[in-house]
Length: 546
Ligand code: GLC
Ligand code: CA
Image (cartoon, rainbow, N blue to C red; front, side):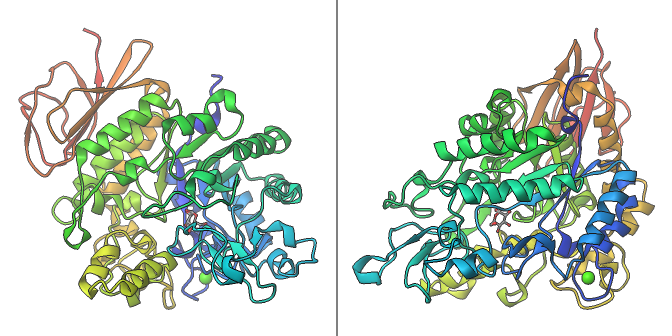
């Protein structure tokens, strides 16, 4: 088969701090990951995406890197990383790492030195004089983490650009030295044996101008930095000079992209990225004016997924990651139908066309964090949003409802390994509170229950791996009753149907009796006398030629 190996992969994302703590300091670490490789192997995944493990002051949990060539002490050492690569390799698991190059931490040597205007590192960053004799920022751009995208530097009195936190200055990709540094970093890790990168906010690295942007509610300035020509040029250069020489792949995290822009980055002839994470399907909820409540709209989700499936050849499919709430709490029902709806979401995710990504804990149906107050949250972005709302005099209840369901900490609570103390995540005090539901929702329980969410994932992963049509077949959405998503995968005359009921109601439906059930979350074995889909029911069917 000439298809690339990463198209057959099932990727598992590890957020290292929250995965498994080996030394009792309350923070997940590399030894902890190594100790769970056998668990991942039995699950059947074959690629791990490791969120950042580099040296970092952890303002943004490692996405603020202060040295790309060393490992955060809290997480381990370079030797331990090498050991992780080795142990993963002998289990047939490849590893991709996060490549965060839009910005560095203000603790990075480049920035510390670069504050001096005479330093060779000064031009690694984007500096401008402020307006009105330095009183106001150079332009009106706003940051992804709220507020102005500029921060005045005490040492040189100029402003530097930061699209994210003011502790994370953006790198200047007009400077060829910066591009050379990035190439060296990539080679360093690829030579050590990794199989690619997840490229953080990669489509915003190149700023084509620093003019005032069109005023918007959020992200003013975006027309000058989202997917600019210069960005495409740099990605081509990285591919040509670096990744083309390795057996690896690049998945880009791409903000504000539509399907055309995604194709511009990852269609086969582009030579830039291999696939991208879009956000459109993560923005399908309706925001009600009252208390900013989010309302899930299944049909909108189906439409967006269908659009991406049909317009982009190879997608990076995901329902969760470290920046998004838990899918079972968001698109399913984490109270009355938790296991059923988690399995239903699994059925959809693993039968779509593209590479599936599973976020740690998703495979046991972990739910949103059970925080009661902002003080219990650690995420920088959540605090920024909360504080902004406070400045705007939003009442406390409104501020809380603004972040409770959307906070990035919802998915960052520690992995629930067992019903024992601290969910066996740590013997110490966890860095972020563990969800109190760990006594019922944990890996140990899932391993012992043959009908668990985990065992369902395991089975579907194996079905997917062994079914060419599910890997490479075409995608087509079929007509369906309201709140039901039905799609067909087809290859060389072989057909599969995925049917997912996204509601808590029974829904009338008609089946043909000679269809074969491949997997059903209600454990159906045949379609005789089935006239209804049960709440959150999912069925994967193989259609026999008649
Ligand atoms: C990406 C990461 C997110 C981080 C941001 C800045 O969106 O996924 O966690 O805060 O980039 O690096
Ligand atoms: Ca630790």
